[in-house]
Structures are given as structure tokens and as C-alpha cells.
Length: 377
Image 1: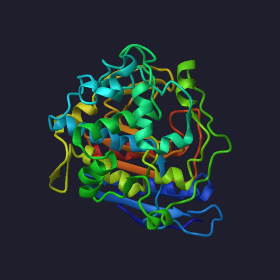
Image 2: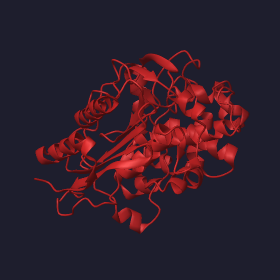
Image 3: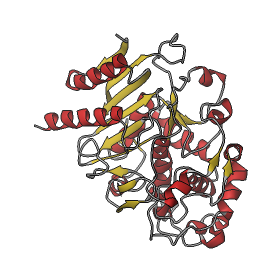
Image 4: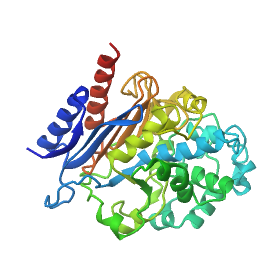
């Protein structure tokens, strides 16, 4: 039986039992699980091993790549600018970043990017892995990227370009590099163990090694458009030191469950944690409101808020009022304004699934939903 460390409020014991069972059966090799209630931790667990040789235990501060789960932090940064009156999400992005308006993109709005209706789900050409590692270069690639279809007419999840569009928009408006804005305004004040790119050797030494899937991905895209969007990046290794050191906002967030749950707690608590207001509650409520419920050319039927997934028959959330996002391989964070609950999960065994949710996340969210229902009685 794998050792699980940390603490768990008695009300959330079913989550601990599931986390333990996944480690014992080998569904997980190592990982962390955390839950906050009204901004306070009620679950903070970690266990298993952190290396491929199974010789090093997962520690309290071990981190792992959380891939697209980092899009939640990208969304928060954008929402902050909107909340402060620095950004109109219904104005063309080119208003703030003129270079983005090239090749027909002059009418694309921030809201359309957040709801995956921008008409720019990808770069429009094959992009070498090394190109993603150079921010200035990839921003130029984004600027010349063509419009694939008229904004607002087609829904297609943007796996990689999403973070560069919104990240550079934050840079253009704030005058600070995207990763600096995130540290200054979000993760630093929260004390959240999360970053885009490893900052130093000490951070590298805390990283868990990834158990990669047998195949690069089991997911079958829903159309030719989705296949193109997902197939543009050529070569590379997402576990390589070069990749982990770069700033790639849509795909290389690095965190543990404690960091994800703490970030999620800001949203689950209506924008305020620890006496500090990060976002107006009305902004969080708008972000968690249905903006687009449509067939996504990459993922199938999805119900979107502002950058978040919402509960639907096809894209189930922990509760009907939850909003969420996850990353390739199984990491995820879910928030609920109605209950004040936030859950973060970070594994190092990556599971590629043809479903929107792989079995661990589905199980954790189903269990959290049952606990939420019991607490409401």
C-alpha cells in the first residue's frame, strides 16, 4: 500500500480513500490532491513516487507539469484587466495590440478567444517545437497567423495559440511580461505554488518525472479543423528541461495540487481570499456563466464560460454550478461559487483518453459532487 501523507477533514474522507485506491492499484504512480472550502484547506494530500525508478517519494512540495490546466491562470490574468477597466473583452484585440490585427484578425475579440470562437484555433502552419520557446518570435508568428474562419461562427478549442494570444495581450496592456504579471498579481499574493516555466535549479529538483502515455494521444479529434489545430506543433519533448524552462501559457503550467486549489479558491470565493480582493464577484459570476454551448471541432459538444468548462451532459462537472479546466494527462482544477469549494489534482502518470475526462478526474469530481450534496443537506 502506497503511503499517503498530509491531512483530510473527516467530511472529505471519500476523496482520500479514492486517492489512496488509485495509488494502490497503479492508476496513479504519484500525485497530490487538495481541496479548499471558503479559501481554507480541508484536504492537502500527497503520496506515491515521483521518479520513473520509483525510488523517490512524492514530497509535500513536489510539482509536476499540469499542461492546459494552466489556462485557468491565463483566464484570471485577463479577467483582472477587465475588472480594472483596462480591457474591454468585446473590443477587438487589435485595439490594444495592433500587430494582432493582421491577416484578417482585426475584429477578433477577447471574449471570442476565451470562448474558443476566435476563428484562430491555431497558427495556420506547422510550428517547430523550438519556436515555442522564444516568446518574441512566437508573438510574431501569432501576428501573421491567418484567420481560419469568421469569428463567432465556429467553435474550436485552441490548444496552444490561446495562451500566446492572451498572454501577449496581458503584456501589451500591463506593460509587464506575462509571467511577471502572473507572479505579481496572482501567484505571489496568493502564495500559490504555480509557475509558467521553471525559474531555477531548486525548482527543477522539485519536479516529478512524467510517466508518459503509451501513445502520444488517444483522443480522436472531431473534425479536420480540430485535427489541424492539434497537429501543428512538430517534434519536441514536453518533459525536456528546455520545455519546462520556457513560458508557454497554454500548455506548460507547473504546480502541485495545493497551488491549483489555492488559485481555484480565489474564484470559488467570489474573487476574494485572505482579505484580499483579486476580482469583483460580478466578474467571477460572468466567467462562470454560459457563454457558448456548441459543437467544438476538436473536443465535441462543450459548454463554455469565459475560458472555463461548465456542467453539461457531454462535459460533466463536479456539480451543476461548478466551472473547471484540466490538462493533458489528467491534472485539473474545479471551482464552485455555490459551495465555496475548490479542488486541485496533479498526477505524474499521464493518461491519454478519448474522453474529455479520464477516469481519475471523473472519479474525483463525482466524489466531490457527492460530498457537496451531503454537505448541503
